[in-house]
Image (cartoon, rainbow, N blue to C red; front, side, top):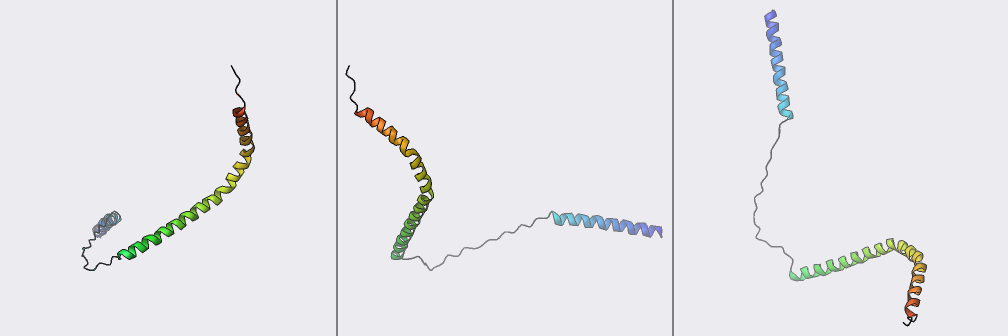
Length: 112
């Protein structure tokens, strides 16, 4: 009876070891999948005509010009308060320096 219990216990331990080994194999397994599509050339060409392509280029050009103009307007509206403040702050010092420079340039040079 003890031999049967020992054999059964050994069998259970062996099965548990195999189960753990299989579980580890499943955990560390990797699946490689490769898909290939065969290219088949089409006999039909759906390219737009030259007139349609020119029209699309004109429309895209006007759209790009409108978007660029809008971007410039937004930039100016964002930068205008800062530029106005800088102009107000720098107006008097620049004006005074300009007058001094102009007065020194218009004054006659001393004769030697």
